[in-house]
Image 1: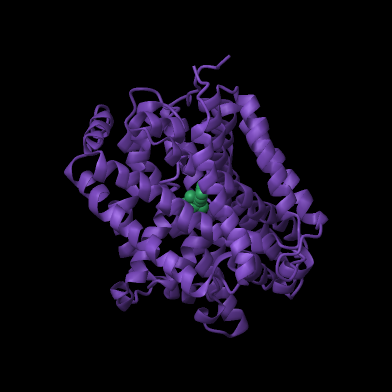
Image 2: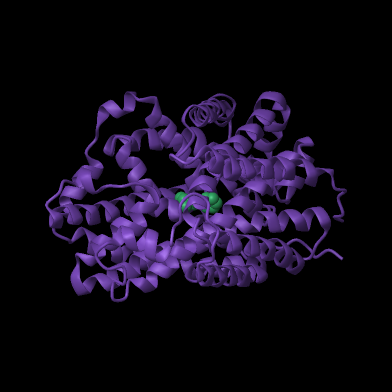
Amino acid sequence: MTETRENWSARSGFIIAAIGSAVGLGNIWRFPYVAYENGGGAFLIPYLIAIFAAGLPLLFLDYAVGHKFRKAPPMAYKKLMNAESLGWWQVMVTLVIGIYYASVLSWAGSYMFYSFGQQWGTDTQGFFFNTYLQNGEGLTLGFVPVLFFGLVVVWAAVMLILYGGVRRGVELANKIFMPLLVILFTILVIQAVRLPGAVDGLNAFFTPNWEAMANYKVWLAAFGHIFFSLSVGFGIMLTYASYLKRKTNLTGSGIVVALANSSFEILAGIGVFAALGFMAFSSGAKVEDVVSGGIGLAFIAFPKIISSLGAGGDLFGFLFFGSLTVAGITSMVSILQVPIAAFQDKLGWSKNKSVTIIAGGSAVISTLMFSTHSAITFVDIIDYFANNIGIVGGGLLSIILLSWFRRPLMKQLEGHVNEFASVKLGASWNFMLTVITPLSLLLALGLTLKSIMAEGYGGYAASTLWMVGGGVMAFFILGAILFSLIKDRHS
Ligand code: PHE
Ligand code: NA
């Protein structure tokens, strides 16, 4: 028996959920340091261009495909252009991302509690790697109980939301968590900019380094960041749009989502750099010397900043890690909705069955893999392969198949969107998707592959890299082939 397809209660429910997906760990820890490393204030220009040249056009494409066919990626791409395996590739990517995203999310949740009494002490790096993660050499698999409990809590919360379905689960959770995030984060940023030394941090962040713009790597960073940040090109926005009602203004919705996402990134940049300015100020260092990227920024630098605030730091830490957790949960939910919907579409499973098997199965794998001494090694390598090859490759394939080889379909999708759209798609959308977006993705993918071949990644041993990265790639390819061979059992 198949259930009828679910719906958002209103367009606003969809928009909030889409913003909830877009605004995630990427806005809070990723954008600030990417912008800083790529020209500071000058980065905002490639960043804006990337939004218009690739982010929005691809967002509209995802919306058009999901909304027209009202299916998750495999069935939607099958109906659009008989490319079901492309859809499964995207599903495999979301499964892989979901499995490690839960881990980072559980760290953020745990740090929310470590904020009370600043349990990380003075050596925040030692605390993170040794005391908390109990990080081992190479790939070591022993059991780390504290990580296990964090993962169980995260997966229980996420599954509870998913069992609620689109309207009473995903939409409701976003309607609670997104306003909460705005409140937590606004208080955090206001506190941060009032710290001594904040101005130096903001200057470091906003001072434009115009030469950076002549560097093609800056442009790649901008394009790469936008795909990740808007959650486009790998089925998430496509799936969310499949629950929209017929007469929907898709472009208007997309513009609101992109605007909200960017506002949140700029706000995060201000908050994070104000705090870094303070850290430089209180340790007598330069802002340049206290900036570090990625996971380290959130779990090593921030605890240090919090500690230097004295007793008031507890609240500051709670706000920061609370924001990360809340932003991450809504993104996590959106990731899992893709495979859940895909299996419902393909095999006619009920929602509950799909949540139990897909989210439950992911939960088991994720919990086993990430409650070990190798959690951060897994996160780091899987994140790199999933984003730079999985997302970029799948997005690239969908655009090229469509805009280079099935041009009449582009026109159809354009017509579909324009029926109810406030901003009409036309020649410029077409041009972006035919020329700019595929070329930028092609270049990005080529450079990634070249650098993996030449120098591996992150200084890991080749055997580790092959096992984890190779495993991820095999999972993408096998899934894409095998699942499209199964006979459809949808009604
Ligand atoms: N867009 C989210 C962010 O900026 C990240 C994300 C990645 C969300 C993958 C869903 C899936 O953090
Ligand atoms: Na984002």
